[in-house]
Amino acid sequence: MISVGPFPLQAVIVSGALLLAWLVTRSLARHMAGEPYKLAGALLLDAFFWGLLGARLAWILLWWEEYSAAPVSMIAIGDGGFSWWAGVAVALGYVGWRSRARRVLRISVLTGVLSGVLAWFAAGAVIGLLQAPPMPNLALATLDEQPVTLGDYQGRPVVINLWATWCPPCRREMPVLQQAQAQFPHISIVLVNQGEDAGQIQSFLQQQGLELTDVLLDPFSRTMHEMGARALPTTLFFDAQGRLVDSHMGELTMGSFKSKISRHFPIPSPDTDKE
Image (cartoon, rainbow, N blue to C red; front, side, top):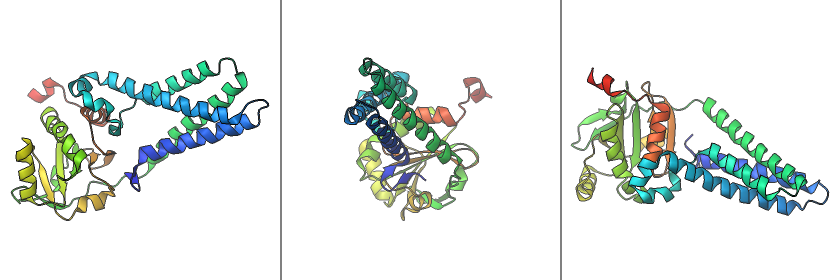
């Protein structure tokens, strides 16, 4: 499952964990004498905000080379770039500082934070155990209308990007995909256009000065349907056996793309490439 309705699955999990943490915090504070439960709930939400900010800043520092090359991408939080370990540490530190003179308040909020973190990890583990759909072996076509199937790419890691020329975030991430194709030749990065014809696509690529390979036509958007994608752009990461190992709905930055690549696919050394 890539999404829940129009929402990315990861966002739904985080929202559910936050709601649980808030309910646990308010419930505990309500039953502790002298502790206003509304204050406890507000402190938890403040901690979440500062934790989210800390997680984003830590992620940017981790992938500084990529983000410094495109500074605007630092605010593109839709790329999913967050160092959650840093975020949890910042949230806990904030709670400890704000509740330093109120021990009972600290207990209720920290318990809520712990509940949310455990729920988040548990949901992630359950999702990881679910059977992911295999790469669909659909019959598509190249821009010069030569037949090709997605199965032709199996045998090496494959990244499939679902996009359209009318989609603003798709257009913005095209330079990232062009750079990725040049930087990761051991991975097939395939751009499967959804619902448009070759003339529209070629005109767009020429206007934007893009030199992309493996651009395929899917005039009936069958890939979106087969993979359960709800929006464009959606990027799917398959291993060499055609198993889905990751997905991303929305615009990708180079930092986020490189993170997913390094997490799932082995990167050959220069010596290996020479052999």
